[in-house]
Image 1 (cartoon, rainbow, N blue to C red):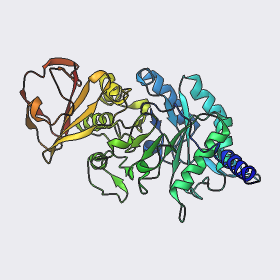
Image 2 (cartoon, one colour):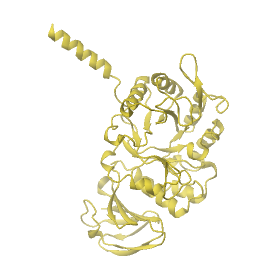
Image 3 (cartoon, rainbow, N blue to C red):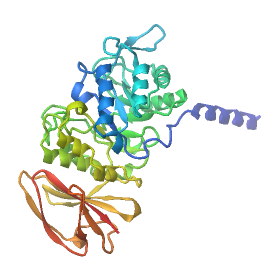
Image 4 (cartoon, rainbow, N blue to C red):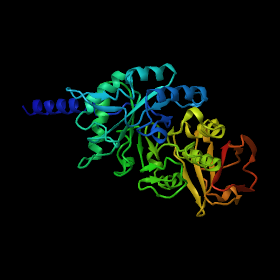
Length: 393
């Protein structure tokens, strides 16, 4: 009798955990794409904008270098029907989400959508609480490839339980969907979410206006502040599970080119998701060049999947290292000063991990081989800018 009882318990546990997993073999490198919020927020988003962003991603060469997700953020939903299924805002999306997803797919891209673990989204549209399985079923039918799942209006909820619930719902729906957890880092998801989501926010929001630093807008941080918040988190990142310091602000509010270059470089070094948030249709040539720099994208997308870490901290001047495949490594000199700074590059005194022998040095922003690590040199790094080297055996 006891053996039968234990057998039934085992069967119950097996059945209850069959969906308790995320889709594997997704986001093996940090996701690359575009999100609507930073430029269009709630009022400006609609199906015409999304179609035009998909067109621009192809026409501007972004698809060719790896960008693939077009993600609608908040404000696409308006209510629920009598059966609890989500209702699309027909004023903004008259053709429906399925038709829009099909259009994005026709461009060779992938389609993403947004919801919230609470009763309402951050823009006070219907959240997914209590409707997780219905929403996941709907997303699968629409052909969704990526879900950004926010954390507004979640009073009294447990983050682990809430995100696991949607993970399980997505898995049960049967369509592989990248699960982007936008929990803001409040419950340290890097410590528990590896088997829940494919990426998780480590911080509150980036200042969409592209500020360098200063928490001047309540919950919005300058991009350099977000860099600081990633220190020590590198051990939690890897293929299929990434730390996310939020979307890129390159191209927003005329961010200076030096800061845009530094911002993009640091996201590459951090193995952060590269989710653009600017208006792709009319971005400047310099912003386009930064966002499509194949050398830096290769650093970000390296198959080894290692997040970079700080090896030198001189206050307002830092050196970061990112291990790469085949024994290569990226070294980033990050000048946080408001003036140019000279730095003596002494390869054997920079605390570079696993550094041995001579490497060929390539300056990635100049796209030029400049010598080997047998030679030290003095370099001037412009104000609030970077120099990024790739070292190759």
